[in-house]
Image: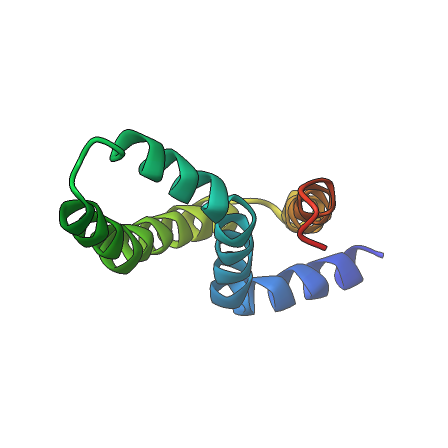
Length: 107
């Protein structure tokens, strides 16, 4: 059984970039609305053009920076895991994200 676990873990390591992007993108899709609503709440006192400019900045630079850094950190964390915990963490992360999406009515 150990060779199959090792082989599957190596398969996951080869596709670590896609897995990390998938997890981070799913997180941003599920919780992006909450981030936008919070941002709207804290910028309510700013005039419309300023609020619009800040929202464009948040969407273009903020989300891009946040996702790139989260992907990099997640890849570093996952690459340091042994075979069996790596499989469990990735499977558990996607299952947990599915439950979060389901409870948030995103699915």
